[in-house]
Amino acid sequence: MTVALMWEARAVPGRGGELLAWARARPLGGTPLRREHFRAPQDRVLVVTWWDAPYDAELPELPDPETDLVTRPVHRWRFESVGE
Image 1 (tube, rainbow, N blue to C red):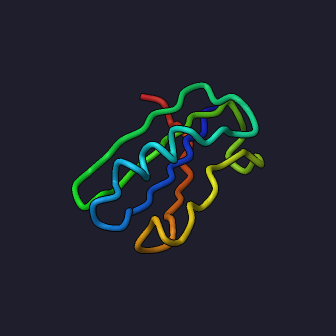
Image 2: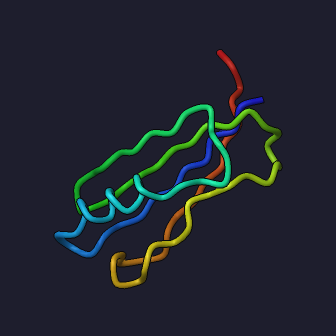
């Protein structure tokens, strides 16, 4: 089964590039099948990692950034692949 972990944060205005660099530099406690980084208006950053694991597996996730870099708590979601 493939599990996707999504991590999304909103940076303090004007610091989206810094938040993206922070997220890219964070190592995980394992190697996902795939890892992608996205950015969006309002200085939002999204990181998606894919893992070959059961839905309820304990998987490494990105930590929360320093509170002075973000405007709200990080949002996290977990999804499982359902095929075509």
